[in-house]
Image (cartoon, rainbow, N blue to C red):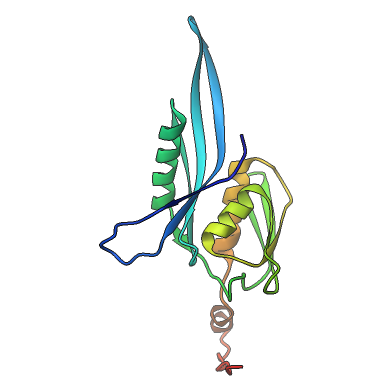
Length: 176
């Protein structure tokens, strides 16, 4: 039950906000044994992003799959945060960690695509990254991989931010 599903959702038509996509990363079924038999409950992990540099994840639990997904998508919309992107890839190599999950992300040349699996791919697609190489180094737990990928994306900084922090001058870039 670890399939990643796409379900495009739209924001209010009044505001000119970009389209938000939601990806169901994982649905888990839990059984509780009671006197009459087994009682099932479900949890869902959902990633939401606008494909323009904002992404978030959410976790929801309920007795029905649809309710769990709805709760998770609401939580993921609340947790959306901006990430630094540079020409549809990431500005520099980064290692993200959360719990036992560790992920290494490297920038890639245009046309490479997203070379990453499972939860990391869902997060990167939702954020709007088109060319990146990713490798999961630690736990294969879906929640930890997703949160480690989000951690890696939040660590990213643009080259001009790094230069300013070092006290260097930011030179003008010439158009090619």
